[in-house]
Image (cartoon, rainbow, N blue to C red; front, side):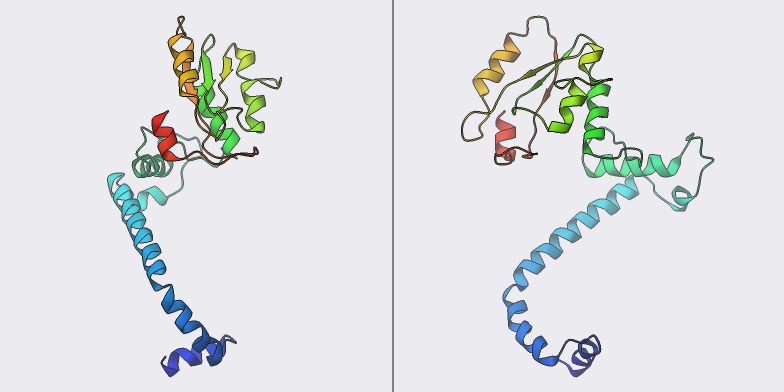
Length: 201
């Protein structure tokens, strides 16, 4: 350990003794740090590629009139997000205040009166219950004539594949237009769903 490095740490109140104690520990987990650095580098390259794809430049950072017309900064940012996350499009707005708000926008943007959403991972987040209309609230999907169905997970947090198949094949009126699954545990006591489980469903 070179003296210049020791001096800088000592200026910050970290003694040489602590540095020498930490050195073998840091060496023992060096591979983990290198793996994190590789992941960070790959993600940074993906962001740079997405920014190049969206032609992000100095003009994207300038202010706008405030009317929202031709806001190339916002449009560029949303193109970057869509490219990075491999999606058809993206909304990246400060007006979307939380996950429930974002999900509410997605649900109301994809469902129309007379259609049905089917949740195949049991009950959704508590906060989504009002959005859907499971708990009565003004402006809910139910109030607009959108119905809701639910298939609970089997013991062991497994999808009820037979129940899902049955619900979809018996939808003679083709009302089910959206199938929703909640990967994270939310506020319930179960494991997060794995990517393999989601692929299988």
